[in-house]
Image 1 (cartoon, rainbow, N blue to C red):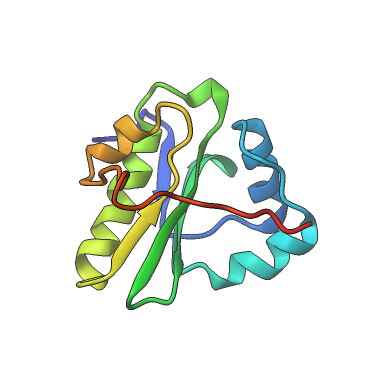
Image 2: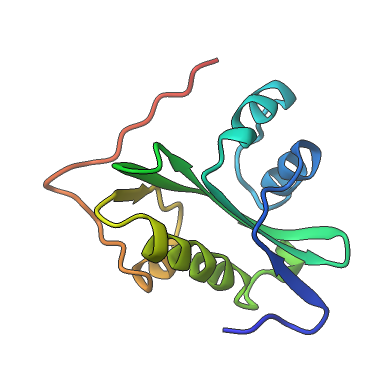
Length: 138
C-alpha cells in the first residue's frame, strides 16, 4: 500500500512531545512526559508517517528483541484516518518482524475494531486459550 501524496514514512520513533500529542489526538490514553521520556528510548523499532514535519501516524514494537515483542501505539490523526496509514504502519512493523524476529511471540491489544487491521497481518485472537490482561500503575 502506498501513502497519499505528500506523506513520507520513516523508520523512527517520534519525540516525546509529538508522541504524547498524537496519542491523545488519535483517542489513545494520555501518557505523562516522564513515562514517555523513560519508555520511548526502549523502542525496538518505530515507524513515523509525516506530512512535512508534522507527525500524522505512528507505531512501535517493544520487547526483549528475541522471545517476546508487542505492537503498541498504532495511532493516526483523525483527519488522516481511513486512508490506509494504519495499514502502512503495520506493513512496516510486519516487515521488520519478518526480518528480525524469527521465533518471537508477538502480541498486541486491539481496541475497538482494530482487530480487523491486525488480522490482515496474521494476528488472531487468543481466547479462550489465553486472555489479555492489563494493569495500569499510577
